[in-house]
Image (cartoon, rainbow, N blue to C red):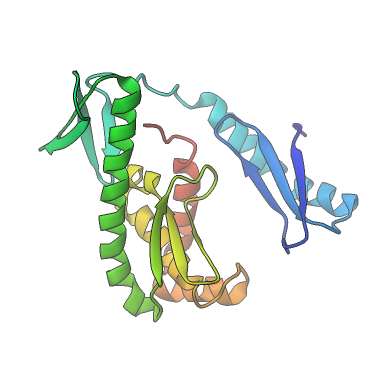
Length: 221
C-alpha cells in the first residue's frame, strides 16, 4: 500500500480516501476509527487505488501556458491568444479565440481565471434555475470558489459553493454538481435518502459521477 496521510475528525462519520493529481493520498476517518477498520477499508479500495495511480502516471503533462494553448470551456474548445503589453489586463472572447492581454504571465493567468470565475457564476445561476424546481429547493446564496479538492459544497445555511474549474469539464458534469449540491439542501449527507433523491432528479447520476472523478485528474489552466 502506498504511503498516505491519516486525518482523524470528530465531525466525520464515514471513511474517505482522496488522491490528488500528484498522487499523494489522504485518508479521512472518524476520530474513533480502529486501525483494523482502516486496513479493511484500504484493502477494499486496493484495486481502485492501483487504477487511479496508474492513470495519474500515464496522464499527459500539464501543457505550457502559451499562445495557441487549447482551453476547455464546457463542451467547447477555445484557443488562447496571448498579447503581452502594459496596461490593465483584459480578456475577450472572439468566436473560438480567447484573447488575453496583460503585462506578464502572472497577470494573464489571473485575468483568465477571473474570466472563468464570472463565466462559472453565470452558467451556475442558469443551471440552478433549471434544476431547483426539479429538486424542490433553492440555495440562499451561490459562491464561486477555487477549492483544491472539491467540485462543490453545500453549507448548513444554504450556501452552495462551486469550483470555477467546472467550466473545464463537459456541461453535463457541471449539471451533476449542481444537482448534487441542490439535493444536499434536502439531505445533508451521502446516505441512502440522498442518493435516492439524486436518482429521481438525475437517473444517470452514477455514470456522470464516475466521469467527473476521472476529469479531476486532467484539469489544468
